[in-house]
Length: 420
Image 1 (tube, helix red, strand yellow):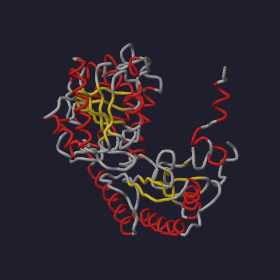
Image 2: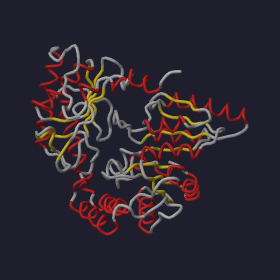
Image 3: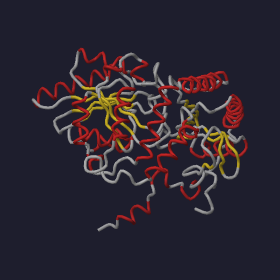
Image 4: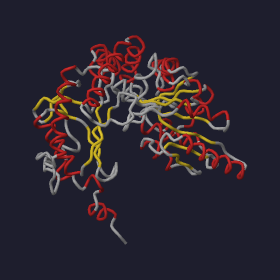
């Protein structure tokens, strides 16, 4: 019999294998100071492009005040218990009502976390007879939810409507054969890695030919897209065609929690059947109070979204002008596509952080194919023109070094935190 722990120690996984050189720097870095466009990393000020703080609410004075007052009034324990048993409050219900109105749905149910909520939501919605059809680039929370699904699931090529229709035909044929079940299509409003919007308008149009329900994960679109900030569905004019609208508070609201919005009867079913909420403590009151204030700012301060988009356009147009490939993004998410190995990528990251004081996220193999590098930049409403100009200069110079082959190395730089 094998020892489970022995196997784990022998193989820490594709990312974990680098932990002795990477921990505290390339992986699990520690950013310190007030959350903003510039923070402290290992004692030095850096321009930060790795925070999901789209509208700059993380350190907004009104938000900080609401968070503090909520904690002072209720503490972190209240309400004590799961919502269904003893953890409900007027504030939880008020937040649900306001969220539903904001995203133009009849009702909404609060969830403790986005990742946990989406995975559990799929489990609550679908029986073993139901078929799920989903985009190949769906977030890990969707993929993990699919792993729990006892029925069939068909994946379609990313944003490929011809392939989606092919999978819908397969699903429809199987439903007719087994004489039970229905079809759920899952996609995203904005795909968080590449920044491109899901083709919600085209997907919704397929409802005229095929019978299915549509679930949209709009984590990056909520608060950033659409005239009012109601998301990708509003931006594409099909918010009413989305049967279930899901988002987390972790992006535009810079908080903790999530919600699902839709028809009242269906949301009520979810409320009474989603295991991750029934068997978990209620969202703490300070977070609920703070999220009410954040949602108020989303509704009443459109200039925050305008500033975000102003910065996003400056950053993205500047990168294009410098000859960088940023793909097909049509959201604030800004990927930069390059070629190189893991060793080169980490050497470039170290150069950016140590010599140019620019901190951004990097994606390498095995998340993407070998030989490719993606830098993902997240502009926010609190970044400045100086932040953008310095970052463009830094990428311009380090790209030349990368192309010249000067980052090539036999292994990743040893930058592990000595105290780890």
